[in-house]
Amino acid sequence: MDFQQVFGKPPETQAKAPGRVNLLGEHTDYYDCFVLPTAIPQCTTVQLGFSSDGQHHFYSENLNEQVNILDINHTPSGFASYIFGCIEVLQKAGYIIPSLCVYVKSSVPMGSGLSSSAALEVATLRALRQLLNLPIDDVEIAQFAQQAEIQYAGVQCGIMDQMASSLADTEHILFLDTRTLERRVMPLPNNAEILVIDSGVPRTLASSGYNQRRAECEEAARSLGVKALRDITDVNVTKALTQPLQRRAHHVVTENNRVLEVLQGVTSERFGELMNASHASLRDDYEVSVPALDKLVEILQKTEGVFGARLTGAGFGGASVALVRSRQSKGIATHVLEQYNQAGYNGRILVPSLGLSDAA
Ligand code: GLA
Image 1 (tube, rainbow, N blue to C red):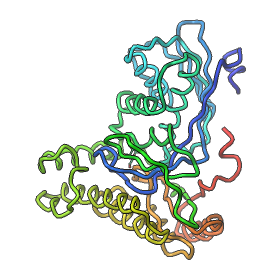
Image 2: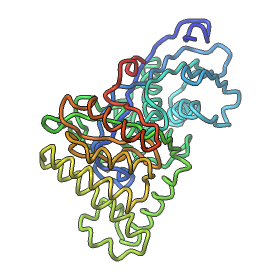
Image 3: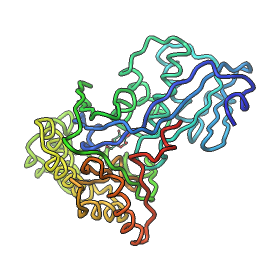
């Protein structure tokens, strides 16, 4: 089913936006810290047309599902909540949004920690900007997208995913200061490329303890008398906290320092070591890993040609990211998946994408 078949006319406009993978700086963007994401080849495409019956109609090709918004005081669930959220945050900002027909298709894997939701939000907002000539720039698109996610999907997320989807490309790392939104694009470390493997264990952000971690670290910041944990650089300061706040804050401060080290310029080997340290910190201090991800990351870290590996995204399942020697990712992935799947799991390679995935 395409737009024409679902809505009986062609779309007026369309836009796309990529998912992202975060290389370093995990679970730190909601404490104003620094992050290092990059875009992935997989994209979400949103097509828009005007609706003639005064109601919004949203259709997802991937889910083969249509949602009709009969009551705008009732937030829909699932994929429709992100589109509805984008429309609502624009309306609250004073823009007049007409009734719409929205068609979505995506090659960004869902539930793998690669920001399928940010890709949907950013693609929706880009398409709306085009359709209605809205005077909003790419940073504002990211900010509206984050508000949609917080207010309508119920995740108290930071701004990394939406900024990455709106501003990053697949050739560079986006160094982003999530407090000031200052940013810089950096090349990937020398002779290295990115390998993303899905653990096969899906995660659900909202129900996964994400909001709980955030609340814990806000309490930690209050106890330490700082605006956000970003304001602490000496990890010893966190010793004043009780557990588990001490472990949580220890992760955030050390993770932030790891990103800042990369900014000074590091070799691929050192970048990899920092990724390994990040995984240990997410597993032991922040406690957002699961046995499947630990196993996958352990196999990756022991494999020849891998500089470093860690879980990526919010955790509680989802994907791993590894920095590997150039042109070796597919061979490494085959070797790693053989061992991982022998251990009883069901992993799959997501980046480099195998053909079909960037088609959306
Ligand atoms: C999710 C959130 C981001 C970020 C990551 C963890 O992807 O949307 O804001 O917090 O988790 O780094």
